[in-house]
Length: 168
Image 1 (cartoon, helix red, strand yellow):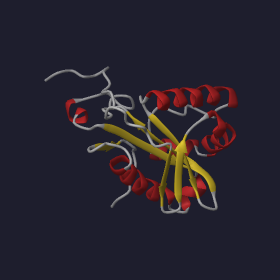
Image 2 (cartoon, rainbow, N blue to C red):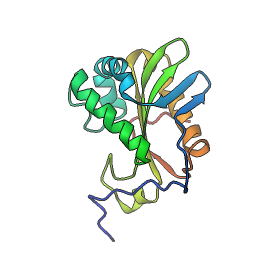
Image 3 (tube, rainbow, N blue to C red):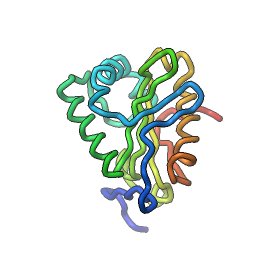
Image 4 (cartoon, rainbow, N blue to C red):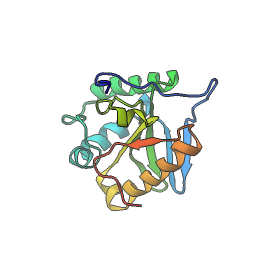
C-alpha cells in the first residue's frame, strides 16, 4: 500500500478546457469568487463561523476574518481559478443575494490523500449562511454542485467532503 499522505492529485482537465465562470441551477447562481466579492464574503463568513465548522468542517475559518486577510484569500482563489488549479465560487440565490461559497479542489487539499480518495477526481465542498441554511439552500446547493461538477465540469467521480452531506 502506497502512502499518499502529503500529496495532492492535480485536477485532470481536458486540453483547452475553459472553466465556466458562471453556473446556474434553479434559483441558485454561482460565479467565480473574486476580490469584488470581498465585502459580502467577509460578512457571510463572519456570520457563519459555527455553521461552516458544523457542516463543511476543516480547519478554516479559525475565527472571524478581516477584509485584509480575506482579500489575500480571494486573490489566491482568483489565481487558482485562472490557472485551473482549483475553482472557488460565490453563491447567490434569487431575491437573497450572497448565500455562501462552493469549492472544487484537487484531492488531497482538504484531507490527506489515501488510495480510496485518489479514486475521486475532485473534492467538492460548500457552505451557506445561517439564513440560507434555514431556507433549505444547504441541500439545494449540494444538488446544484452534483449537477455542475458532472455537467458543466468534466468530473466523473466527485468526492463531497463536507462533514454534513444532505440525504438524497
